[in-house]
Every structure is written in C-alpha cells, then in structure tokens.
Length: 84
Length: 155
Image (cartoon, rainbow over all chains, first blue to last red; front, side, top):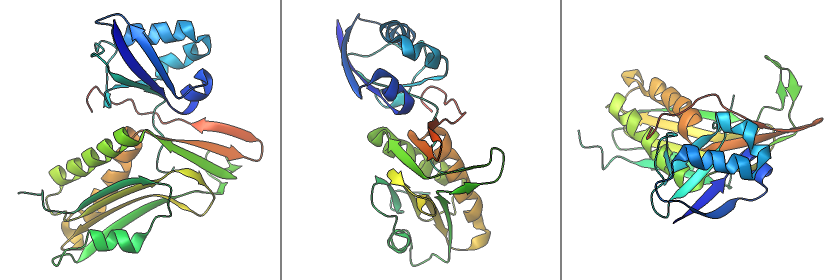
C-alpha cells in the first residue's frame, strides 16, 4: 500500500468538507483511478471531476501519472488568482 | 547570460502590498525603468455580467504557488534578457474593493527593452498556472471564481 496525502482547495474543499485527507491506496495507482475513487467516496465531487486540476508533489499531473510513494496530491479548480 | 545574481522576489502574503519596498528590492544601479501592474478588487463591474462585489476571499496552495511564481519569473527572463529585477506578490485573505491584490513589477535599464511586455506576460501567466483561487462575495451570495486554463503536465 501507498500512504498519500490529499489536499483540497476552493470549491473542492467546500464539497469534501476537509482540507486534508490521508489515504492508503494501492501501489501504482494512477491519478485517474484516484479521481474515480474520490468521486465514488464523495458523490458531490463527481460533477467537478471533469474540470479538476491535480498536482502530484506540487507539479501538474496527467490522468496517467502514477502516484509516487508518500506523494502529496492536491485537487483544485482551474486557478483564478490576480484580477479580471 | 548569468541571471542568478539578479533580484527575483516572490511571495504570498496576508499583509498589505508595499510597492516602495518591492521596488527598492528590484532596483539596480543600472535600472532606469520599472513596469508595474497591480490587480485590484473591483467593487462595481460594468462589463459582461454587471454586478457588485462586497469582498473577495483569496486562498493559495502556498508552497506550489511560490514555486510557480519562481517559474513565471524564469520564463520572463528566458524571453526578455533585458529584465533586471522581478517582483511578484499575491495578497490572500479577505480583500475589499479598491485594494491591490496582486502586483508584478519588472525593471530594466530602459523602457524600450520589453519591460512592459514582460510585466504583462507575468500577470497573464500567473493567472494560468499559479494555484490561487478567489471566492467572490456579493450582496446576493457567494461563489468561487474559476479560471479556464488547463496546465499541461509539468507546466
């Protein structure tokens, strides 16, 4: 098993109701599989998953990215800093 | 050109943005121009979807946001070798209309060196890849503002 830390920001955090989740996941799990698991554990995340950004150890990741051991994952909406 | 000695300042802060201090930090003996952009909280929006804003609440994934600000600065230097100093600051927390929320400043020897374009590039990139979000609170409720840029892996 691989113990990972998942951080949620903005709307994702509001929906999950927590900033941080520690999770044991299978070895060699992909970002896509993690998103599927989170959507099934937290049904109110499901509709957001299409547009969610995922970082792995603070770098933007692909759905195919494999989660490294002890990774810090973050899920968040497209960024909206600065001003319009 | 070795740019490692040139001043690059970046920070996420809850404090008021201090322009004079930042400018002093990116001014060299050879500096003769600074282009400064600052984004503010707009209380009354007239364009597109007209509405009023009571306040904005900013949050950041701080360590990643600082790393991405550093990356934006490196991208600026790769495109405009004339740039001397770069400062990028995002203020987070609850911010009211007429308050600066973000500042990017670039310095160079002269103004015709790309210094305006460099600052423009910096703010545009910040809004694409630096993980910061804002919640807009208005008279009739609140909502998270979402960007529309999807970064590539490793970007």
